[in-house]
Image 1 (cartoon, one colour):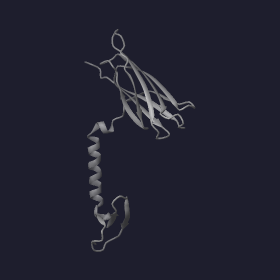
Image 2: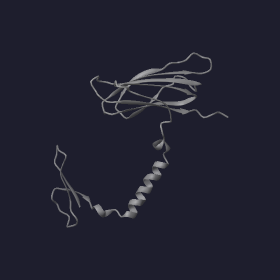
Image 3: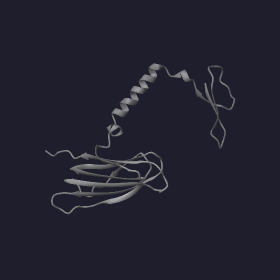
Image 4: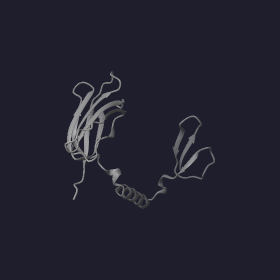
Length: 174
C-alpha cells in the first residue's frame, strides 16, 4: 500500500510503501497498491489518452510557420522583424535562459489593397517560454510587417532572450 500522513499546515509528513498486510487504521491515507493496474489496463489507458489528444488538433497544433526570429547579442534585449503575405494569424514566442519576467513591445503594420495601413501596437509582460497572439488591425490583409522587441523587466538580470515570430497563412479562396 502507498500510505501518506498529512499534518494540517504542512506538506506530506511521511510517504511509505509496503507490500501487503492488513489495512490499518493508523492515521494514514491509504492510496492503493502499486501493482493494482495490470499492464493491459495501463496500455488501454495510454491508448485512450493518445486518441483523445489526436482528436483535439488544437492541442497538438504548431503556432504556425516560423517567419522571423531574433536574439540578444550581448545585451539582454532582443529584436525580431518579419514580413508576411496574407496572414490569418500572427504569434510571437519568447524563450529565455532564466524564468525572470520579460516585457515585449510589438507593432504590426498590415495593408489591404491601396488603403492606408492600420498599425496596432502594444506591450505585455510574460514569463518564458510563452506564446502570444498579435493583433493585425485589418481583416484579410494583403501583407503585414511585424516588429517585436523583448527585454527583461529588471535591468540587472543576466541571461539570453530569443524571439520567434509565427504566421498562419489564410486559405486561398476559390
